[in-house]
Length: 402
Image 1: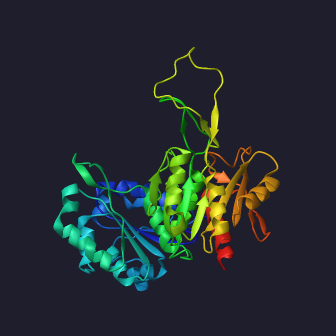
Image 2: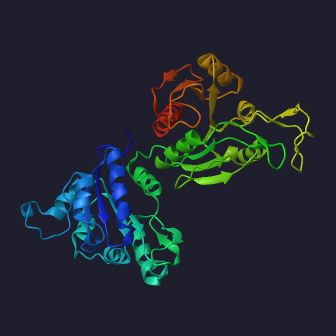
Image 3: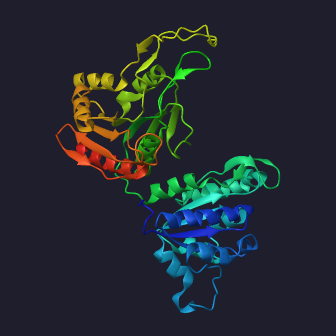
């Protein structure tokens, strides 16, 4: 389970066309074990019925300050006190203005005024409304109050206009919530993570690569950001979306990854090399596509730089160097190979996984890893999601820092 498990989340839904997306957000929160109470503005009920949210949340939907039922419990105070976080999505220009000026003329606004919970606001509206100086001034005021504002996505609006104003994807809102609710035990640390494969070109159409997708490295970067670290993710080619709050540097080849890592390495507190860097590249890459029947049937290869080994050598000579975490993707002799690499590459911690498993390793959403550190400690993790695995890796890193 994630950090959201067991948390009390108030989902404030306002009257915009994006209100229908909040239905999926309700389901997503519940899948992760959160308890969701939906609070709707009066205009929101014109877009989605309270009955829909009641069915999805498994709870009563609230909308009026003056409801006769449970009046003795003072609903806006009760809900404000029980919440761990208040997520407002979509947040309309009207609700943003109401909150910025401290009005208490509907239930959602009174809850926000009365709560000590973390507040995340996801604006969604027409682009011109979003850009208007009044809306921007109101958003600035909410930031001053300490609320987290997630900038809307750009795209085509329901009205046909193009620009900023679309409700962000759930993954981005989720990352913000997790960052608020997670322990901030990596705060103040600069962290570098590598992820994904590298592509080594043979010609403009063909390349050498591997089966890595970047999922594990992206999970490591996202988990570190949730826990307060300043994260730089150096990513080989990947279809994954950049984790919110993480600086992403895109590279293609092993040499490009090496240059990006070396440029930043000494500034970091921790380096996690989760990328599956190609060990070899074609010795010669031709500028034009090689035609059938004209290519030799043997391919001469050259060794790529071993970035992790180079970092380990730098660490051996330095009085002060970042903690160095490596990954070992193995198909046999998992523990022995991991232990060998831990020593040979002068690592502080190595994460080993069996790439022959169908439920772990490349492309799988889950992983089963073995952690070995230079003090001789060993930890075998069960099958977990890659996000859960990432958090366990960071727990081990923090143990090394103590």
